Image (tube, rainbow, N blue to C red):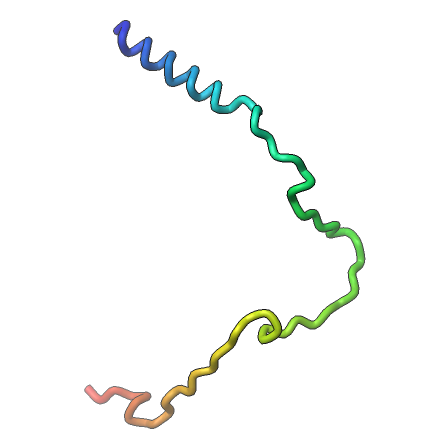
Length: 68
């Protein structure tokens, strides 16, 4: 019983010391967006910031329907 209490106290102390805020990040590192502000609409085109490749699909009847 004494061993179980010692282990539980050790785990509790480890959790409590791990939660102490010694390594906090500043809020300057994060990007904030004001969602209440009225921003102008902007059209985003996917090809402007991603590489897109279109693949033609087969449309023959024997490929669309499998005969059982």
